[in-house]
Image (cartoon, rainbow, N blue to C red; front, side, top):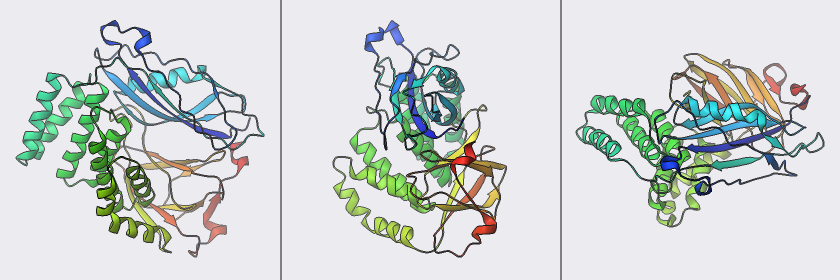
Length: 369
């Protein structure tokens, strides 16, 4: 059976504190289709994990494939908070999900689903505030080692809701910046944006976060991501002054994307839930159709690319160039290996003189047979 339809899902799971009735839960699908869509038919809720502290909330983002008969298969956990047990709850439930069968003739389809279920505790506990205040004091005194120990202890304790998780990842990003680790800072800020609790991250906070993400992505050569951050910033109310502030950077971004020179993005693998479980990965939506890997550090094992109906995978090796088919919309690259392994993701311009016959593999539908 060919597997053609690539999809993604974002799920938020939370404890029903104080026996909150089911009616208080929020359940919402947001479907985005590029062509004729595979509408959701049946998506049973993932079970709330039993092996977590009372009140803990979790957030999981999964990329998956919709088969021609409407099943969700081949999940990749892109991001999560709350621990590996939340990821397992989602993966365990996915075999029961059903979509309207897209059939082989409907081969241009991406579905994004956002699922939320929560108990409504959108505030931080006094315990969390005491712990985070001690971290901020250590940072103010430039006691980075002490701050790191305290942050690691907060993560290890767990039991945080999505409001607290948003704040915690913002703080982790700030600490990584103080430690001189821009990749860690970027990861922390992206996690905070992914969780995106509204009470913890209002319009002003969202504007500041997107501005910092844009600057970090420009610094690290992740230009395709920088363009997306800038576009999202434009849509946030009150962003006009920041757009003026970033005008020079935005112009430089467009020059980089239009240049003949390769785009070289620095990258690092992370486990989605930052625990010892799970597979470390990095994911990216490139701006160009041809790419390669360079400057490998640590164990970077393999990659997989998922487009609207095509998949391509292979070992990561420096010096080999891969190309994607034209006209397939956004493709997402996943790179897998050991946590903290690093590399450069190189995007090549079509005008570059590469030996396509010898060095390039092209994704085709028959790769999936």
